[in-house]
Amino acid sequence: MSYVYQWKVSNGDEVFVEYCWSSIDKCIKVVEMKVNGKFHRVNWMSKEGREELMELLKEDYSMNIRAMEMAMVS
Image (cartoon, rainbow, N blue to C red; front, side):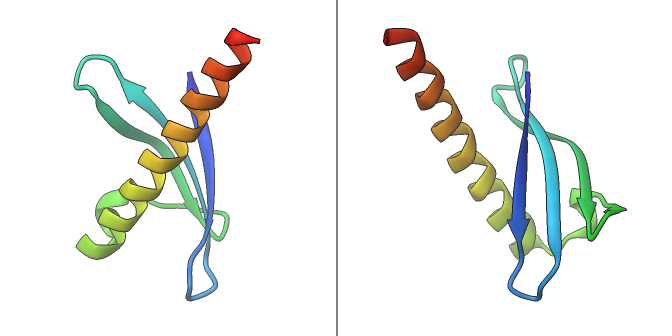
C-alpha cells in the first residue's frame, strides 16, 4: 500500500510524494515525487530538505497507521 503526501514548501513550491513502507528494509521509501507538477527525485534535494521531507513522511505514516488501527478497533 502506498500513501500520498502533499507538502507546500516555504518557497511556494507544491510537492506531491507517493511513498510506502518497505517490509524488507523497515523504512519509508519514496515511490514517486513531483514538484510543481514536474517529475523530481529525492536525491536532487539538499540534505536538509531530504531530512525534513523524511521526517514529515514518518509523521504522516504514523498518523495513517494509527487511523487504520483505530478503524479496525471500532
